[in-house]
Image 1 (cartoon, rainbow, N blue to C red):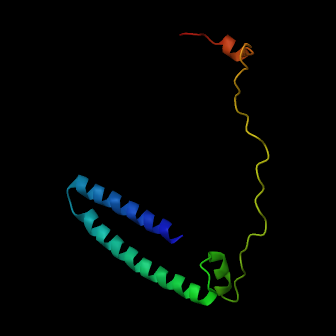
Image 2 (image 1 turned 180 degrees about the horizontal axis):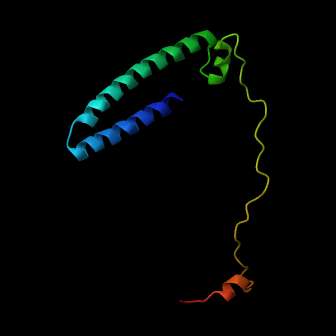
Length: 114
């Protein structure tokens, strides 16, 4: 969960540096320095939250952290497993050796060349 936010911030930083380099000013570079400092603070705070949750529950599973909620908020646990897609895909098949394929009626109505 945390890594996806960090990767998005790094993608924004790369595009800001490229924009700044293309336009020949340092505005994007300065903004990247601020983004990196915010990301470092965010990483430190997230690390504290994860360590505190681990010391209370003894597990690193995010579903085990549901008990750390406030008393007025209900747990959100998925009870139903999503159903599997039971229909098989219809892939094209090759004709057996020695037999000619069945003709396609729509292909016969089309021109071979224009």
